[in-house]
Image 1 (tube, rainbow, N blue to C red):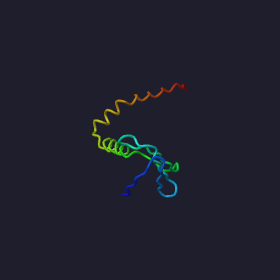
Image 2: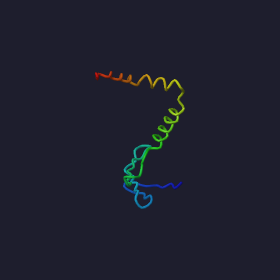
Image 3: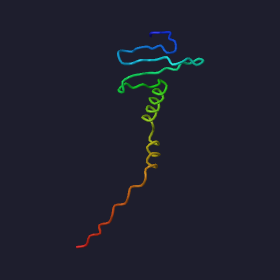
Image 4: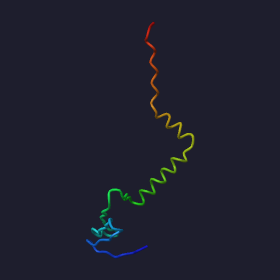
Length: 86
């Protein structure tokens, strides 16, 4: 891990197209700005981990979860009677 000390306004480059700018220090935190190409996903780690945990829990749900979901589904419409006469 590379550890750097930066002052507000100073930047860090990652590759040729990602720039991290230190915006300001706030108590025990730091505000940063990130410039990256649109195709680069930027996520907070705790959010990614929470989503992964929720997906894992959903994948491991028991049969009662399927019954609960089925109860949320609206009833299927009744098929229309054939109104044609010979």
